[in-house]
Amino acid sequence: MLQTSRLAADEAGLSEAAAILRRGGLVAFPTETVYGLGADATNAEAVAGIYAAKERPSFNPLISHLASLAAAQEQGVFDATARQLAEAFWPGPLTLVVPVAPSCTISDLARAGLDSVGLRVPAHSLAHSLLERTGRPVAAPSANRSGRVSPTTADHVLGDLDGRIDAVLDGGASEVGVESTIVACLGGAPRLLRPGGVPREAIEALIGQKLETGSEGGASPLAPGMLASHYAPRAQVRLNATRIQSGEAALLFGATPPSGTQSADATLNLSENGDFKEAAAHLFSYLRQLDASGASTIAVAPIPEAGLGEAINDRLRRAAAER
Ligand code: TXA
Ligand code: MG
Image (cartoon, rainbow, N blue to C red; front, side):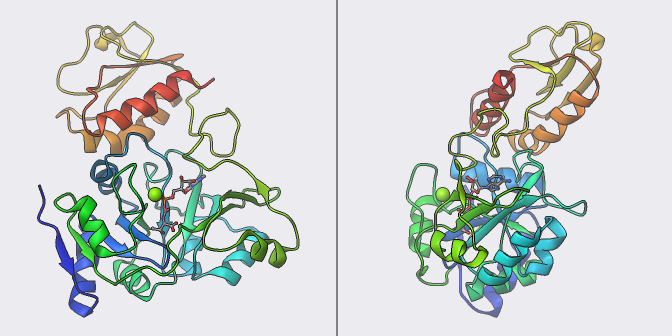
């Protein structure tokens, strides 16, 4: 149980909030849409903390918040349409999903292993000051527990997350009250992934074309080849492996490796200490590394279904099922 502090909307509160984010803590902060639960997007363990605090049973890609378009362009590749939308609607309640830039520092856990990234420059002045002081992209889903409504005041946030996060920056009530509109610009026609604070009509009027409609990233994942499809390994994935066969790649968890581990083609341990946050932080990059080893099967040791283990197992079950 953490002591959650309520920070005032002043110089001292802002510096404290930025300091907490920079050292890997969790700070809820106001945006013009809803309060976000922020973590340093470049720090995968901090991002894992978001999922733990929200008790979210699956990993979906998170929106990373930035202070300016220039900062966003270090993280993602903006085509002409994305640039036009950013220039018209940022700062504001619009999120753009764009391909990751080579200079992207956002962790793969925040991107749920995807090669694209969700970026937003919020209009709220406190959010803006916090992002400037933090100097890093800040991943932030709505600051509520999974399955509850999105919070528009610091009291709502505390009602759900008191004792589970480091602090809430209290900036009064959010104005818009619904989440940002999400538009994907991934080559081809721009696609509306989620309706929100910027009306579809305003976007279509600006770009002079209709937005395609597609399903939201986290909501209905996994028709293969779909835009929002999560990273799927090329190798087969075998779960709850209590014995590793020779030629398999092994993804381990905890101190006791399954029998046969010494004959594995490649071995990585998500967390030798059995720490779920550490395991979540490693999950996507280890899957990719083991996939790259060339083994035809990745055998995954049993991982307990507790805390973040649920989200980790959910992700692994999808990896085992996706073909
Ligand atoms: O108003 C908002 O957008 C609030 C405030 C706090 O800024 N934030 C918010 O964040 O709603 P979040 O992380 O809950 O939004 C996640 C959604 C995912 O479900 C997915 O639809 C989309 O953002 N998303 C993010 N990155 C994506 C990606 N690379 N590909 C597809 N969808 C993505
Ligand atoms: Mg939400």
